Image (tube, rainbow, N blue to C red; front, side, top):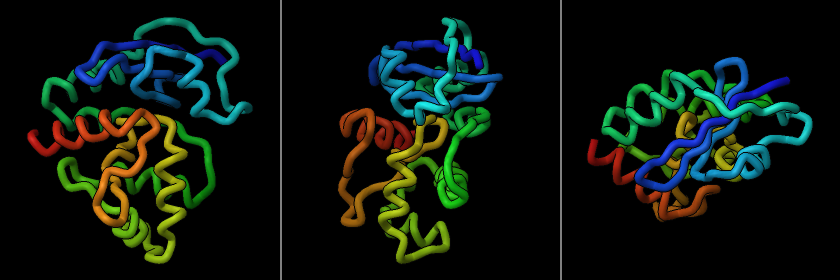
Length: 164
């Protein structure tokens, strides 16, 4: 399988997009193809990667950083995981910008109030960052918690969304 990779400059640093057949499979604040590939299980990594234009995905990132948050949610994504993970990733896309949830609230949102650890794992295993906004989930005490691309990026994204 062959994929397209593109890197953009953003206010939060370089942003990489890895797309397969027009669907984002991994993305994040890096200029390293290896860092994006590491977000995917080895058996899901594309065999060939070509530099190119990811089209709508790149346009949506540019729009996001220009203050238009809506296009990000229209970008197709492909994720590989369990039924619960897929339900969680779909649910992440329904969290309103500027209205983050805690892991406890996200577990309730998933219909499993006691599944706080599962909610955190769903966020941690999210490969197409920004397009599936796992940054909108905070620790149960309301603090930032971790983020694969760094807490400063998470803080910046949340501040950008709150201001929009």
